[in-house]
Structures are given as structure tokens and as C-alpha cells.
Image (tube, rainbow, N blue to C red; front, side, top):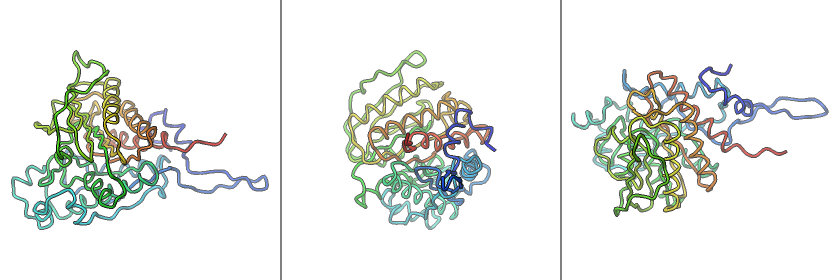
Length: 367
């Protein structure tokens, strides 16, 4: 049975990806199973974060996996199980002193408080696994054009500390691993979490020079235009589209920051996202796009102040995927935050990201 949480507009896609095909043989039809998606989903039950009662819905990963399978969006064969990143991988983005503290359980009380989740060896394992998942997603994206890590996107982790529920910056680890292996030279991060990707900006700061505000044809929003800040980077170009009056208080400069006012709705948000992508891709040619598909711009999110609808968030995903596909840029996806009053809404938003990718990247059918 199709879940009532999926929008009716998604039913046609589900029929296309129901996972069965008919093969005619001597006028008889037989059923044979196939992988339903033209890309891989990276997932492990061990993505669950052992943090107890918390505003971060640690169970969302398992619920997303179950929803995708039960609704017929994905087949078990579409999922690939990651291995934890190695310590050497983690050190590509984080300092030895910080990694040692995590491995030995010697964070200070202040450092654990800044992390905002209770430290445990099991939590370290979950974050190492999330980083391994993003490495695997990047590898599959380069092979298939797109891949989705049903987890990750911990964009508030800095080289020498964690904060904002983020211990390890899995996306940065994946990018640096792909560069180390010679699989890519450049990457672009497109962060659509409601909170600015401060850890991303810090890790990839490189040598920056201030730039004038980027030319924009985006709409005015609630009486004024969002503030666009720009700075040029080296081998990784960072874009963050976020609520200005929200965490973090200090926002280090990304290559492009779009500081959105409170209460922005679907159409204006999408116009500014389109503008940011166009501006970034005029300046930079990435070998890999890393899309941080946060669910927290949703209008019923507990930690956000934007007003996007469920359908608007799916249109956001489609926009990113269509831009990447049109330019033949492989895109790997991570999920980041989502704190809706109803956890099932967060699950729907993240599941719709998979549906959007399937709709955009499905191979053309023969006439």
C-alpha cells in the first residue's frame, strides 16, 4: 500500500518504479525483479545516533529506509551498506588532536557542551560510519551520475571541534578522499539546510578574497532582497542558502552565502536557489556537486523560521538535480537536519528527495 504521506503527484513515478518488468516469451508474460532506481542509496541501520531524547530525530534514518521500501520507491537491491571511514580518511578534514580526543573519549566539558549531543564511543562509530557512507556516495555518484547517502550532511563540524549536533564533517572527508584518490580535482557544495554551513565554510576557506555582491535577478522578499555575500575559494566552491536570523550567530564566509529573511516561501526560495546556482556555476566548474538536502526549511520545523511546503522542498531537490544533470555534474546527496513537529513529515521530505532524483535521472524510455 502506498503511504498516505506521499503526495498524489508522486503516484505516477511509483508506478514507473514498481520494480517489476514484463518480458514477452512465446506470447506469455513473466515477472522478473530488477533494481528500481538508476542510482544507489547508501544506508546502514547503524546510522542511528545513540543520543537519547533529543530534538534531533535519531530514528529518522531507519524510518526513511522503511518508507522507501514499503512504498515501492526503492528495492532492497538499491541499497549499499557502507563501512566506517578510516582514521586516515577523517584526518583529511580534521586535526590529529581533535580526532585523538574523539577516539580516546577525552573531550573537555566545554567541547562536549559545544557538540550538543552526549559523547559516547558508539556515537563516534556512528559518525565514522556516516563519513564512510558519504565517501561511498561520492564514489557511486561519479560512476552513476547521482547517489544518495541516507544520512550525513554534518556541516557544522570544524577541523578542530564539533558543534550543532555535528561531530565529523562527512562531506568534507568525502571530498578530500576523492581528491586524494585522483577521482576529482574540484567540488562544489550546495547547502540547503536552514542553518548556514559554517563548518563547510571554515574547512574550505583556503585563500579568499572579498568580492562585490553578486549580480542577481532574484525577487525581493518581504520588502527587501536577501543579503548575498561572496568570496572566492580554491578547489572547493561552497554555496549556502540559509535563514539569516538563525544558528550559527557567526557565519564564516562561504563562496556564496544567501542570507534569507524569516518567513520566505516556496517561489522566492526557489528563485534565490536558482540564482545562487547560476552565479556559482558561472564562476566555477566542479567535478562533483555535494548537495546537503536539509529538511529544516520546512514551515513546521522546530529549529527553522522559513515557510517552505512539502511540495516546495521537493521542487528544491528537483531544481538542484536538473541543474546538475544539465551540466553533466555528478551529484552526491546527504540529508543534514530536519526537526519537524511530526517526525513523519521529516521522513516524507527526505524520502521525496529520492523520488525527485528518480524522476530527474531515470533513463529515457524507448518509444
